[in-house]
Amino acid sequence: MALHLDYSNINYSDFLLAIITKDIIEKNEFQSSFAKFLRKDHMSVNKPQSEISRRTFIKGLGGGIVGTAAVGSAITGGAAPETGPEGAEIRGPDKVQIALTVNGKKHRLLVEPRTTLLDAIRDQLGYTGSKRVCNRGECGACTVILSGNTILACSMLALDADGGKIETVEGLAKGSKLSPVQEAFVKHDAMQCGFCTSGFVVSSTALLRENPQPTLEEIKMGVSGNLCRCGTYPHIFAAVTEAAESMRKGG
Image (cartoon, rainbow, N blue to C red; front, side, top):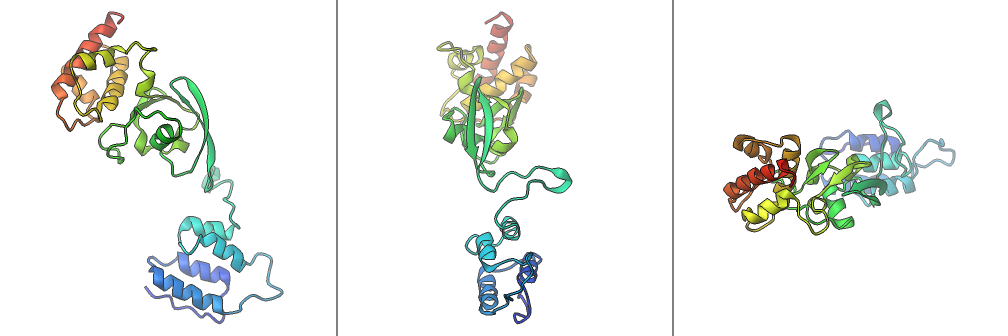
């Protein structure tokens, strides 16, 4: 879609508006339009204070990449607004400090707004038991427990977990003593490659906390969000069944 602009009269604000209201702008087309725009000396000595400067415009575009966030940054001089629609807080685009309690230990860390909870706990905090396998919320290998509920850490932003209490597979054992679920998985050889195992263990633990005496069908449903590409499901179901019995006996 070509940009048909009168470069002799257009100001910075109008140019921005023309850019963000187009559905599709090819990179070379934008560069050509921008070059034409900069060749014109539009800036008046007595320009209004609200006008956007070339320096602010270029800085906001971030090297020529056009996007909603970049345009917003240009308009506000690089600073994100404090609140959005209906007073919603806007955090970013720079790194933001968050607080996470992982396995009972409190952490404060700086994350980019785009950082997933999985990347934060693995790469910044070192809890690598939660696996990055599909990284799209399909396999369950990254399952953790957040405030009592199982969630897929690869599909949640770290910002959304700010202030939350998280349990990973590393936090299920008590010192060197494995949890009943972990012991049962070892006993029944409920693993093969191991990439999915931590997710199954966490999901099974959450299931048994909510339902101490599940039927086989309930076990299948409880771990249905986890995939084992090696096909160890019969061993997994047997392990969860035995772990449930052990936990009922106080194991």
